[in-house]
Image 1 (cartoon, rainbow, N blue to C red):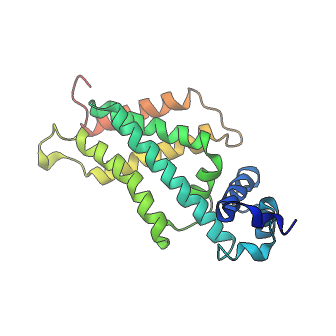
Image 2 (image 1 turned 135 degrees about the vertical axis):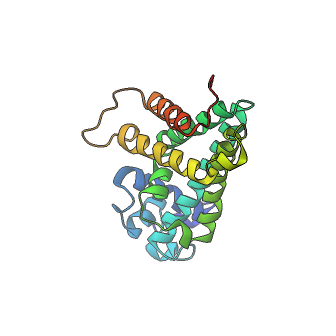
Length: 205
């Protein structure tokens, strides 16, 4: 079995894929490096040719997740234009869709305890996703006098937190929680209430 891993076309990626499957099944803290190695068909010693340890494996899974996430956010934003509100709401829906479609990546990114800022590669790609929301928020405030515009970084952070809350409470099946409405509807109405409260939507928005 130990030699089987060396026949992988890309052992590094095979280890990441094995890690993602284990994260999906057991959570980010629910498996060992030995289990990841076994799932990829190699010895634990072989893992160290590519990764410093289990946390490094999880960090790479998270990095790849952020790459997918940022791409989805960018696509959603561009697909929602030319309406600033439609583009903004599309990014929120993309957040929910990502959590459903890529649970292993999502958990590696947000539930593993990794410090994004301590990892330059993670920080850079996470910044891409944040930049999409900030751009969307900036566009929503263009109709307001400059002195009255709320900081785009603040608005995007609030929407990110709202999206994350809907995912954690009503999309990922938290024990004992059941959405009173579809998660997409909860998020869309929440975004609308929040943006109108800040005056970011025109009266007919």
